[in-house]
Image 1: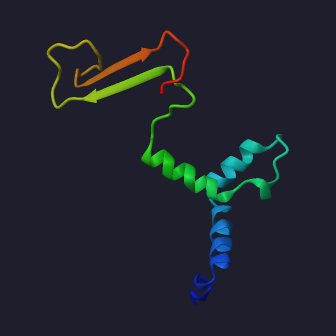
Image 2 (image 1 turned 60 degrees about the vertical axis):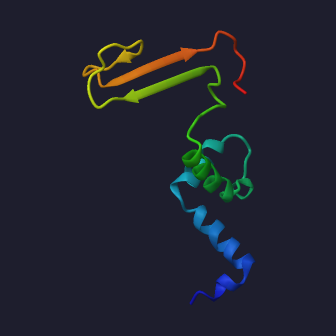
Length: 105
């Protein structure tokens, strides 16, 4: 039943066929429409890598390198803070934008 697992090429082909059925792959494929990208050129393995990297490293340091947003959830309302509190005072937010438009190292 799982004899195909003994052949790495068949495993790879099966994996890639499955990845092409995922909503993430279809979303990526839709995003490439109009850019002369053929479905065969879109690597299904790149989808899983993006999902893994997005889970392991959720910071978006590429698209907004000049902005930092920090949230702190507290068990009770803050007495004093330099952050922006929510309505209950238990969630504080700080947002800073870099004056220079250079990416963070």
